[in-house]
Image 1 (cartoon, rainbow, N blue to C red):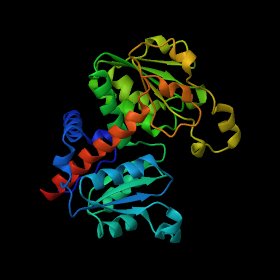
Image 2: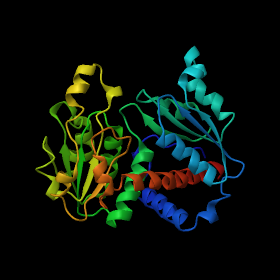
Image 3: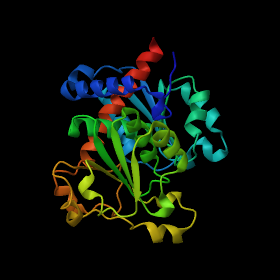
Length: 307
């Protein structure tokens, strides 16, 4: 049976827990998984720039014993000739056993999944969602905080276009006993549809503020994001908003001793490099956890496709 993961909601809470358990086992026993995907091929189709996500998928497949076919520049692909996403998905299905795709247009990954004959993993579609980053985020929180119950999670920066934020809110809202603090300028607030679907409909408490300093003492998790230049229609708005929040040691001084600071990366200047030395900084651990969660997801989808 062929199954794809386009949105984090495609995975049930039980499946999320099982994926995290698999990732934990991979961390503990990497040699046991070194041949799991021998003879299998992953195609990474990236129609917009990426470093971490693309290389994380590729490293995940190699560490499972598989191989990788990589497209990293849409300009050098048939997309530049006008080939549709649907046709690209059909073609790549002839070469690979599973596809990871990033595309600047919302919904492109779903189109690919509806036309591919192999599983498709959404590696980010425009400002919509980024489910495998959320898998990395969930494992980071579980390993660093011991679970999800009772947490106050601050989301700071670009909450309007931040697909990682949208996916994370949707995922964490399924755990129930959690609170959100939404920190952003008025122009970059979390979209109403995300608040309605993930928070209001479930009665999950949240507050909105424009000031990071006033909520720092309350947070168990702080998820920083960059203001994304590529999502803006004009540079003037970007320049006005890009430095809205900069996390530095002075702000960290007001935070809990067991706070964890996360960031999907890349950062620009929203987290001072001086914070990197703080033991509460977890964003580079996040990168590593992302590889393990992608390994777990590849194993799940290929296993289901073979059954």
